[in-house]
Amino acid sequence: MRKRIAALLIALSVILASIAIVYSLNQQTSEPARIRPHEPIEIHSNAEFTSENGVVSGDGSEESPYIIENWQINATPFGGIWITDTDAHFTIRNVLIRGTGPDNTYGISCYRVSNGDILDCTIGRNFIGITAASSSGFRISGNIVYNNSNDGIGLEGCSDSTVERNIISSGVQAWAGIYLALGTDNITVANNLISSIHNSLNLGVGISAFRASNLSIEGNNISGCDYGIDLYLSDDSSVYHNILSGNSIQAFDNGLGNRWSLDDYPGGWGNFWSDYNGTDANGDGIGDTPYSIPVISRDMYPLMSPYAWAPTTGS
Image 1 (cartoon, rainbow, N blue to C red):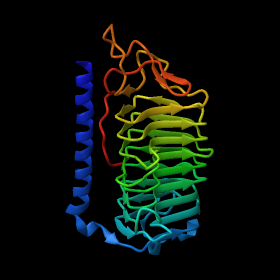
Image 2 (cartoon, rainbow, N blue to C red):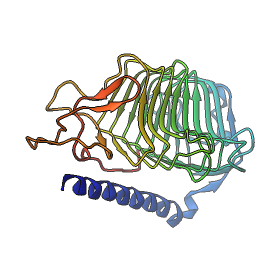
Image 3 (cartoon, rainbow, N blue to C red):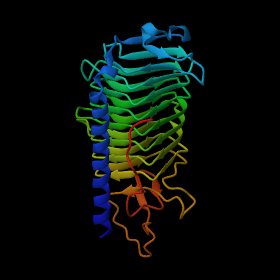
Image 4 (tube, helix red, strand yellow):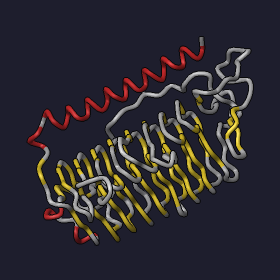
C-alpha cells in the first residue's frame, strides 16, 4: 500500500512540474512584445555592463544590480551571454537562448565572476546550458534548461552559491543535469526537477559531483537517469529529502564524510528511493533498515514516501 501511495505521489510531482513548464512557456508566449531579439552578449569588465550589451536598468550595486532581461538570443559557437572578470552585481532574467545545435554552443557562460543572478531563463540546444567557472556568490534559479548535450548546469571551481528550482531535462545525449566539479565548494543544490539524463555509455547523471566538497543537495526530484546522484571523490556533503525514482543506478558515493540523511531524526530523515524494499513496522514513515549506496555509504533513515515537494518556477 505504501509503495502504491509513493508511486502516486511521484506521478503527482511530475504532473505538477509539467504544469509549471507549460505555465512558464505560456507566460513567455502570451506577452510576445516583452521578448525582443538581441545579438549575443559579451561582457569582460564592469565597465561593459551597458545598454549595447543588453542592460536595461541598474547601476551595479547590491541594491540596484545591472538588469539584463526580456531578450531572445540565438547563440553562436561562442555562446549566448558570456561574462568574465566582473564583481558588479547583475541579474540575467527572463532571457530565451537557443543554441545552433547541441554540440557547439554555451547558453550563459561566466568566468571569474561574482555577485550574479540567473533567473527565469529558458535555455536549450547547447553544449552546456549554464556554466560558471572560478566564480562565487551567485544564484541560478527558476530556469528551464533542456536538450543540452553535455551539462544542463555546470560549475567548476565555484563557491558560496545556490542552484535551485530549475527544471532540467535532455532528449539528446547528455552527461549531467547539474555538474559540480574541480574545487567547487559550499554550494546548495535544492528543489530542482531533473529527468531523462542519458548517454550511450549509460553514464548520464542527474546531479554529478567530481572533486567537490561541502555540498548541500536537498529536496531535488531526480528520475529516469542513468545515475541519480554521483559523489565521485567528493567529500563532506549532505544529501537529504530528495526523491530518486526509476534511475538505473540511484546513487554512487566513493567520497569521505558524506551524509545521506540528517542526524536530527525524527525531524530530518533521509531520501525517498523508489527501489527501497524495506519495511516500516512502527509506521513512522522511516524505513527500518538503511538503504545501501555503493561504494561505502548508506541512507540511515530512508523515507517510505516522498518528502513533501512542490516543483515551481520563478525566482
